[in-house]
Image (cartoon, rainbow, N blue to C red; front, side, top):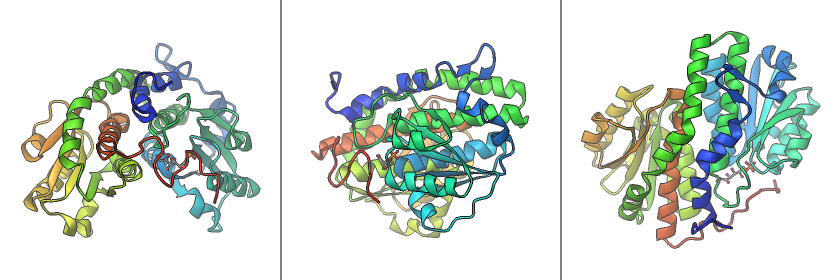
Length: 366
Ligand code: F6R
């Protein structure tokens, strides 16, 4: 059932090209230049009148929500707040009539997310679900939704659920951007074409596998890791750190790269590996200067870069390349080497990758 892979996690990492394809199949129609999603179409008026979207989720799903915040604001110009479900539900949150709540959950059974949905509904909000498990409690409790079609995710560390959640949320944002007119039709078309190329590019990114293994071997005994990213890739840094923590039990922190100078820079010395996501879009120059600051303090730099990169290559100890794409889609590629890195480190440390200690696949307790 592991399809020849040693662990479910590795199998699920390698399933991502197909999982992403399955998620946009029948929804992304690039020839016609349309996106078809019944859950969005049926509630279009609600979406168009939304003053704000509040995203509630936990863990990796919360990180997908953070990526979605950049996507919705950037493409569809809708203000977004992303909340940990556990904080939202206990905070007496302000929910207005024209707010839309999007709940993201792989399992559809997370107790805090379910409780946040019930609270939002009781205050009159329209709640849209993004779940992987069909017929799950959250899928049933929400007013409408869109499934990720990732297939069963068995490994406790979430991988293909994350990239397919981002895929679904991108489709929704693009559909709304078109409906609102915040995006030109040529730009919209370009996004559809680029999204359709992502599965092949994920396959390319997966080819870094053996090199990532080499990097894992070098740093597997580190006590701490720092993960840095900016913009769309800041949530990816958080997700990379979470993956490492949960399966290898190495302490790791994700940070927005520019925040480094406000504290974490004090941690940097020759024993600190720092994974920096530095694709050639967005804030590339800025992140190169962040890398220079790390280098000056002798930190070990593992750069996640766009194929053909030159500047980071000169500074970093290791670079792992991912194919080029438009900025909003870079998280779907930069995530891949970070999943592999945590996987190989955990395997080398002889940890129980698919069932890490103290963790369960769905957290049905508060
Ligand atoms: C991380 C992980 C957890 C879950 C979180 C939410 O790899 O698996 O952080 O992401 O418990 O779970 P769902 O998405 O099922 O609500």
